[in-house]
Image 1 (cartoon, rainbow, N blue to C red):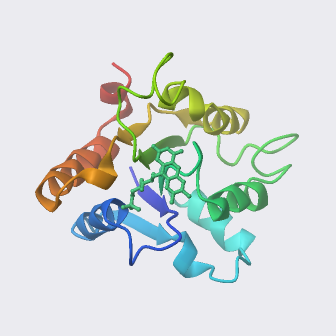
Image 2: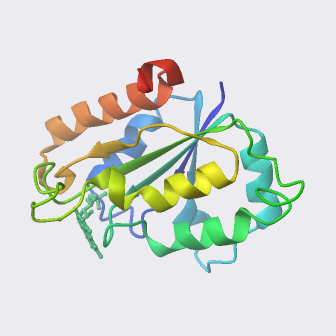
Length: 179
Ligand SMILES: Cc1cc2nc3c(=O)[nH]c(=O)nc-3n(C[C@H](O)[C@H](O)[C@H](O)COP(=O)(O)O)c2cc1C
């Protein structure tokens, strides 16, 4: 199983949580990491290169900080540019069929706030429905998201532990994640 993490953070230097996750990921050479904002500072996405990357991996992880209940904008552009008609969906668009996808999000708010009647009104799973829809539309397998709640407020030791949990999660077989 080849796993690719597509990390979309607009400012990884200033990041606390996603940077810790990225540092830990570097200790796992079996997982490829793709820093979207570093690769495309001018936002000119190389579509064939990205599609090739997807073809070469079995599991794709979208890792990002939650920004207004969604992903930072370069990842949205990446989805729009890379998941093309006739390639990812539509007639003959079956290149992602059977691939596994995991969305991995860090948040500022607490888990408790992400529920009906809570400060954020809806669950994180509900906010992530557009990702689930996109994956299903492409014939992919949408595995349960990994959510690191309140990551903004964790100290280094807690974040390090969370990073280890994250890596164990994205390396776990689908059967374990969907039990
Ligand atoms: C523009 C912006 C929008 C944000 N929107 C949300 C949000 O909708 N929900 C939430 O829980 N946190 C939100 N946050 C907090 C970030 O998710 C949080 O700071 C980030 O996950 C921490 O990761 P980092 O240390 O890698 O930047 C937002 C932060 C910024 C800068």
